Length: 211
Image: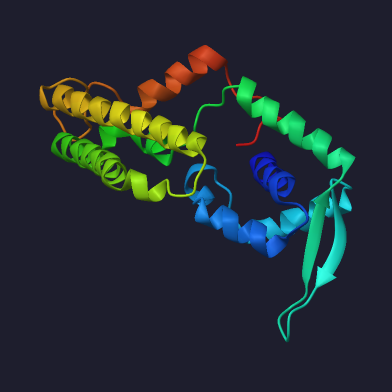
């Protein structure tokens, strides 16, 4: 929710007074659902909530023909303070990105060795394809956009290139025989061994814990 607030408050700051419709359309054009986890369907709800909290003021309602009425928003002093707080929080703090791939990778041994190698190399190709597409179309995408938007794409490209190299490296190491996969003979680990290790480190369950 904080990221959604930051994105909305930032655009209101730029465009005020502004319709919620314009905020939604602009954020959708930025593809924020893919890199900021801001869902377009949550934008109107967030606008109403921030208005109730006094961060935004509803300064007008406009209607064109038979279309639904559109509320026009402006930032309040409280909203400006919240915007500056959120802006500096995300500039000065680091939060590790959330990626479902990491959850799947935690259970790498459950994939056959050959499938893990294939999946990693396929992921590398996807990442390399994204980078190539940007390089081929970057000038077009940057039309009428501030220069810092291009720098943001460069950061995303650098991350993709680094992850692609990592995927190739890990695939090669798995292919060479490193690690353990459950479908292979000689796997000495068992669920019971693991359960005992958990109890040895954290102790026996107590009555008030959820089972």
